[in-house]
Image (cartoon, rainbow, N blue to C red; front, top):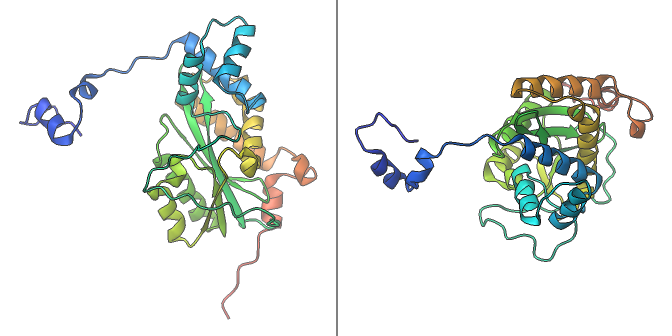
Length: 276
């Protein structure tokens, strides 16, 4: 947005764009190894105790010998995009432009593929730094249909993932997410509305409404991410791609009677109507 070669001064460009001049001169600092180690441990504890807030995680970290305060834990949790999961009073102070849709999966029998898709975002630690992962999951078969990595929690990589899934497999009937700002944004919901997809959103603090994606995160992290200290984003990309292929095509799934998500997806795909 700021053009350093423009005839207008940087101060004037910032004034026209209503930006603080400090944002132009800010140089991002690398995250220290100590902080990265804390973030990874917080991620591990969050998987084990999703109901734990900053105070509980602080106490668990202190038991392990980490000198850390509640505010630092809360700051790192915000950076990682994770929050304690429990029922809270008045949790939703929503942006007026972001509509919240009802949860449509309660008491709904889902047995065929492309009936319901789900999506979520998780934090992926690396040896130096971290990235975020968004997946599109078929509810009935647990098959990962598309995924994207990004180094910021923006909406665009979620939109790219859902567009790829729709292009490759056609639109589902219902698309379920949590109430994260990436999924409530107009950029994301417009893609679903353009394909006549019913939008469903979890209740506030109800992680069980999207439990299959939460189970995918646990499998991915314990079976792939925590076993490898990715050096670069390219390494993370290759590692996640390797695991997704294994997860879809090879890994037997107990909830699917030992079958793979690939097999269940294609075996239960509704037949498309043919032209007369």
